[in-house]
Image (cartoon, rainbow, N blue to C red; front, side, top):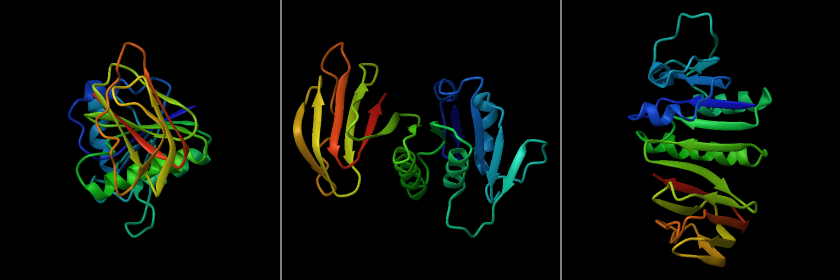
Length: 205
């Protein structure tokens, strides 16, 4: 069961972003994410928000109106709601770019979902992001570059194979992020994993 969460961050290439959406997906529009719905060809299944950046919709679609003063952002609330409803695969669109604070918060949603055993990617105009732990993830040659960013402390046992810059049982620390702009070295996908800690894998188009 797949859930697509659409936020209000900029989307300039609706054709590319729309490829992440399938006809039977459960689609949540978060506040000004409603502005993207038509461009993405997406019909919301649920609308959530405090509607400080989009007028409150007048529609028969299920809508949850949130208070403006709250701990959860609209996007965090959407992710929690989808988890409660049993969704196990997630795509976040319109969730990166624009305000940096919201972008970083939305990256943390990937961690929230990862720790609950969910598969999640965040896609923007330039990249696709996901969390890497002990389970190996792949990067195919359709991506020009990929980067590994340590999230919280030191990532240990970092292994990268099939890449221009391989790693074996390495460490990446938050204060020295040297895993930026690697490349797939051949026709086979590169493989990345992290024995302890969490890495943000950013695959750049």
